Image (cartoon, rainbow, N blue to C red):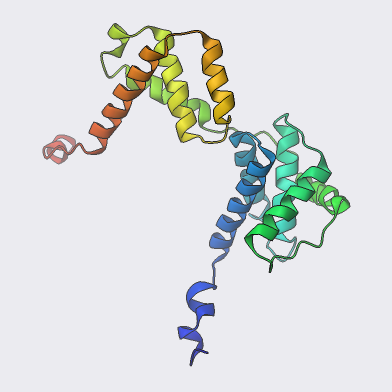
Length: 220
């Protein structure tokens, strides 16, 4: 046992800020969503709901484990991919049990339903959340215009490459099997698409290491 509190594992490893606790809860929401095989947008919406609720409330008001489960349940409905409340309850319990046997989740389906009403009231029923995923695709397409790709490849190849890269960044929209089937159904020459992807990746790698010593003089 440590001689004093400041040298103990409790202080050095297990004393967390409320921000760090919120990050842990975001991780739990992500794990629940993965077990449900939901789209990434649903997970993102649930995380936003969770953070919105605790802007004006504390973890003492409502157990964050119950709130995390409830946020996933509500986000699935709002994003038009509803899951049975009992399924979400079962998957949440499984996630918490896998993480640690110390996590207590003494709640049942009615508790999630009741918590949902508190969450809706706290958010004043403002449920629509806009995410940057569409903007990500647009950004990648815009980057292609900073090269000569538009003169070399057809527009659909660039568009599909942008979708492919956005999926790499946004893991979780489709399983690998679903993605492969989707690309196969397009009936396009994937050679051009893969070449565009490789060229864009090369451009991003070049940009990431670019340093212009004259830049400070130009902007000053």
